[in-house]
Length: 166
Ligand code: ROI
View 1 (cartoon, rainbow, N blue to C red):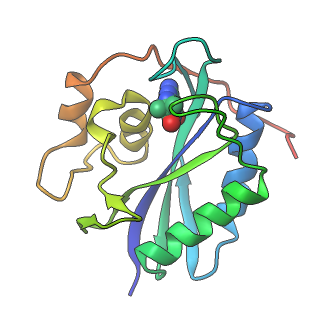
View 2 (cartoon, rainbow, N blue to C red):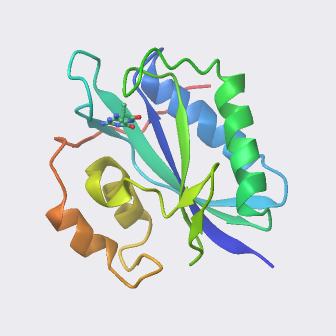
């Protein structure tokens, strides 16, 4: 059985847009998974300490027969493969991959919280989800489009698509 999962991507170190592009390539190669769509990328002001570079954020839509925790294992492997650095709490990072939504599942354990715990406060996650599916809802029925209008503003700026960035 396949589930539609949405994964958020973020980076503000080491050529962030390239980090995201590389991560999308890696996600397109996951086992038991097909990449259905990729959102535009956005520059965004950092949530957390302001003395760090702006982030680049985006999201992808996957169809997968992996379990949520298997998917998380793969996301963490991709983060590591791209030399993940987290310099401090809520500080700069090379690559963050988060399970934002996994079908209509609600998960809360020591490794994984789905829907993502901060989703409704983060325009840089909500907007790419809307780009991928304007009708999307949380498992509790709240509409992403509604949450987007209520969440803090991180000054999203849509970036031009990257070409020839291998
Ligand atoms: N801020 C923005 N704009 N984008 C992120 O992806 C992001 N990720 C984080 C913190 C440091 C909380 N701030 C962020 O982990």
